[in-house]
Length: 119
Image 1 (cartoon, rainbow, N blue to C red):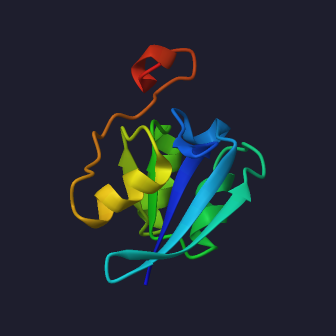
Image 2 (image 1 turned 90 degrees about the vertical axis):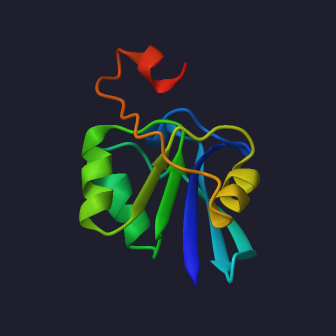
């Protein structure tokens, strides 16, 4: 089983990981989504969210943009990071499962440079 989290704003992928409204969690098996749940964002504290999600068994995180610190923690926890995603969260997960969604590798360096995050 693969557990994929999407940083979400409603049903869409959000532009910035740490400030998302919720995390949409998709449990998948054999390339199919078998369960969906939504976890409200428990709050943006440096280093907290990557561990929060990894502790919940997340294997992949999909987001529009993400800071380098979060990326580093996810990497340490063996969670695959996909950034540069947009649009419908479930569609993004389906695209990931069939190998179509690849990370752009764009990392948000500073919050004041929102234009780097695709805003």
